[in-house]
Amino acid sequence: MRTATALLLFAATLAAQQNKPSGFTKAADERVQFYVKQNKFCGTVLVARAGSPIFQKAYGMANREWDVPNTLDTKFRLGSITKQFTATLILHLAEQGKLRVEDRISKYYTDAPASWSKVTIHNLLTHTSGIPSYTGLPGFFEKESRDPRSPAEIVKLTQNMPLEFEPGTKFSYDNTGYILLGYVIEKITGKSYAAYLKETIFDPLGMHNSGYDEWTPLIHHRASGYRMDGNRVINAAYLDMTLPFAAGSLYSTVGDLLIWDQALYGENVLTKESKNKMFTPFLEKYGYGWFIDSMGRHKFVGHGGGINGFNTEIRRFTDDNLTVIVLSNLNTDSVGKLAGDLATLAFGEKIAAGAGKE
Image (cartoon, rainbow, N blue to C red):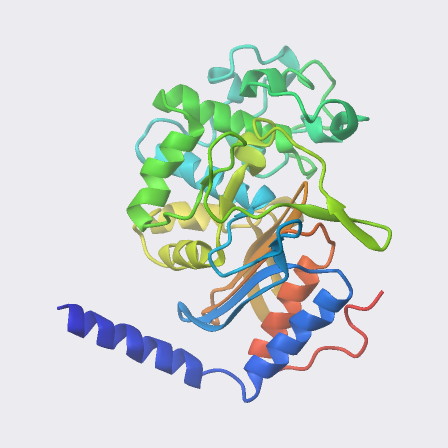
């Protein structure tokens, strides 16, 4: 049986390698180096066709003070890529009949003010609740981001502020909404968000290099985060990881995210009906934890992440069975551009002249 499985994996890998444009490996590496040389990227990238990598490589340092290089096993903070896992847990609970996405959040968060009476779980998932985002508070990162808080304490930072709009009428990216979703998960399951995620998704899928990024535990191969200060690289500011919670506190590797990508093609994680909900765009092309967009004629579902010292991107071109994952431990606004460039090259298309330059 093992021999047959190995042969199938080899055949799939060979087919994927044969199904890539001529010169793709060289062109992809040169494109990544283009960003590296401008201090716009440091990390790992993976491009896969039908679940088999056709390009994967690590660049730069996981720890610059000790000259430890990034590898394909390096673990990166994901930032808002976390939201798709939170959305999946909510839909998983809905499949079990433990909640409905039409439920009002006040059913689970009993301290909800009267102004939230129309806010539903669907609104939280799609960033259409009108609840102000705590990360948008003036001076939050300068004054508040080092102090640990419980999910309820985070919600209380903005719960007495007026809604920004009538629920369901507009889109406004809202981290408070996803903190509330994590709160709901913990209240229904009686378990921590991290524990329920591990037992529901990470362990069953074999994503053993993924988890909740806490400061205290020793996490093997965890990257340090950096940012640019003018022309020099410096350490990113400390962020207590209770604060991003279900909106942005996970870590992973490119390999584990490929496992995640492939699992979403089947129904081991969610039913077809649940996935239809997740990948149906509401306002501003946003579904449940995913943007639904396109590059030319190529449709994709994807999401980026940005957190102190890290930027990330995953794009799933499901009609083309192509996946692009970019994880950086250097804050940069170019990770999404790089992911798009790698996809363009994988499709055998040309990148516009001058793209990616300042």
